[in-house]
Image 1 (cartoon, one colour):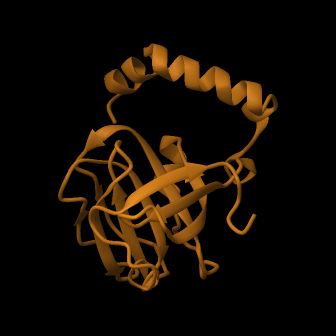
Image 2: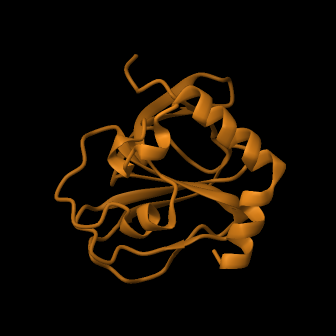
Length: 166
């Protein structure tokens, strides 16, 4: 994200409204560090609105959090992950440099639909992983979990503040 696009994003009325809502819900948020941010529940649904799977995801919102991602971690608990939040739908590109865990990358657009699933990204691989289609959110989970949960293109997604299992 360029400095100009970041500035434009933060000036949008929709961002200001969302930011005010977050501050209302979490008044101490400005003093929190990345690990202190509340996890986001990411729930996948089939065409009949039946829950397929649920993940508890650590949000990666700031450029610093997104640059760090899951790098240098030696493990990831089952049905957890990291959710990267971008300000608009566009083709996203990721890689696995300094990431030690094999991952599935689930690309989600602003209409909360899975647009692409990259299965089994190899640790420390610097090959570009593309969303192929415009995406706004990327959920990284343990390799194999997308297949176990039958997550494919077109599956619907909902986000919530309630951790998985509650």
